[in-house]
Image (cartoon, rainbow, N blue to C red; front, top):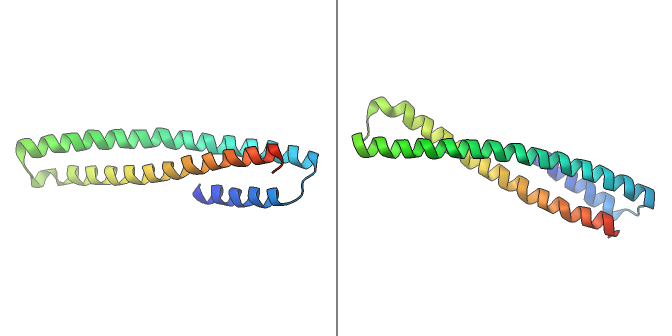
Length: 119
């Protein structure tokens, strides 16, 4: 998805540098609106998944803290430790990806303004 957004940003920058007639500008605005809606939908889905993973990670971390405080480290809990580590790391990657989506979709709003104002 990151590559698609970067590719689209390059495309829209290139199109805005070209001289556009009124009809071309309207078609570009419609296409841009459709693409922004697609990216917004993708952002919403990733936000839901990110919240799910972060919630699970926080629950696992809280339970891990409870287990370690009450029983100390135990070898039979190694699979649980690994699960907690994996979910926490995945949560970090989801946060990073969502951060990218949020920032770049905000940048696409600026292109909407440029298309409408002929700049």
